[in-house]
Image (cartoon, rainbow, N blue to C red; front, side):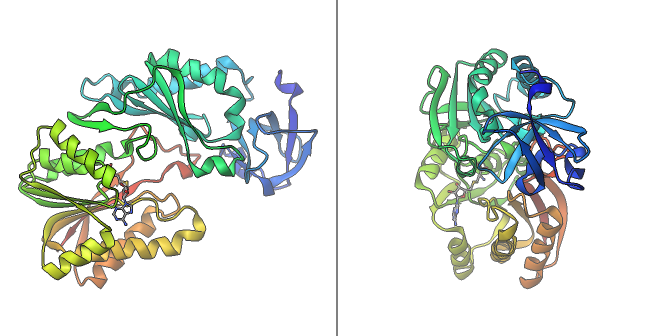
Length: 399
Ligand code: SAH
């Protein structure tokens, strides 16, 4: 359909500023008028109060984010449009994927690639995707073959089993979308570390690709260190520490299946059990147990799940992050490293730094930041869309 025939969403007076700055979300409260019978998945023209075109977006009737803009340039949205966006996202990551020791990478990161609500991760010859926006639903049958064509993959698997689908009024869904079903475990190479990824039942799309660069950081600093890897999942940081020359690594996670896969990931990298052990438990308790037993570490990694889902949960999450860092500091040798992360988008770096500072103060330890850590470059942060920045970390020397 030609753009001029699209239905219209007109914004309230003085509510156009963020869209005019190319932020892609239009919240329900900013909408003055919906002209005609607009349904989920329809493309709409978004106009300011003076009828100037701000962009072309797709509509989602049950979400608070009522429209996500696909084009600020007013292009026609059709198969060629999606082909262009997908190709551009893949080209951006070519330098990563052309490395022989890198066979997994995020290929499409939603709004940061101007494809709102679409996540695509590559694991060797397979893609795993999440469709998280009602506006893209009518375009699945166009997008899926384009993903196959540009990636040359063997199969595409869907992991749209996330609560953000519920907010969009969509049912959660998983399964093969195109081509071959992936094997139960896909072996990937991340900077010469091998990991088996369970894309069907693992967390998110199976692996935390966003930590790739931070694993390299840990690897570089692990020689002769005793490392406690908290929230270890399938052992990304544990393998990195051991390959980096750690003398001993303990991996803690509450998920038994994750720890099982961690064990086979150690084997895949030729790492024996001699200097590694797992603890299947609650990190908050395990850290307290080590204080009681007097066990200390040179490096403690904290990579917990998202504690704040939204801005309302920031205070509660801040208390949990602080408690973790406080308990961790108590088991760090003087001069050791605390490597602490937050993947909560609503906890900004400044706040995270303050939380960490408060924790050290309470632990009666002096500390300094020796490195700021972030999500990897395959998860780029769009300047006009600060929400795309979510993973932040601090490497702190704890004296
Ligand atoms: N660092 C990992 C990713 C961590 S994801 C990596 O690089 O791959 C968060 C992990 O925390 C999950 O594996 C989850 O099982 C675990 N988890 C969540 N709450 C926990 C708790 N209270 N104690 C221990 N593990 C927990």
